[in-house]
Length: 132
Image 1 (tube, rainbow, N blue to C red):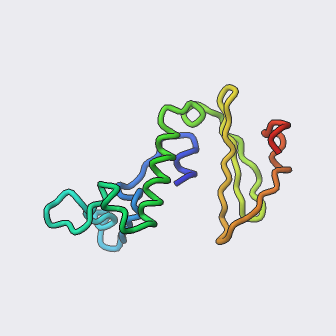
Image 2: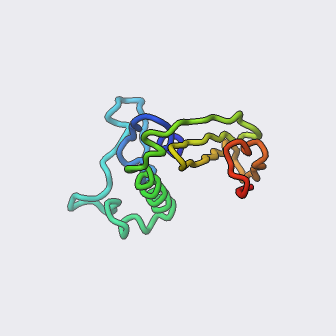
């Protein structure tokens, strides 16, 4: 989601991605997403509210992360108008810079199954001298 929401273009997301809902496409496209929990009298869970998501910490974490990222993206010219510079992936880490005017972000995506320490030496061309 970080990649889709920080690269150029208009992202397309399925509803309920924010609460980690998934489905299978084996029957039809309509089965990819089930009904979103909440909003109907018979629903036992309500993911529309913070209280309803509280019982599932992973769904809550996912919702909060996407909410933060989407709010960062909203109206941010770095994302909507900025240039993009890719870096060669190393040790399973892919990085790119988005820059617009005098503002920039450097995004790291970890393709490994465990935490990684990133050496910033490869990225010095886009980092300020005081940021090492």
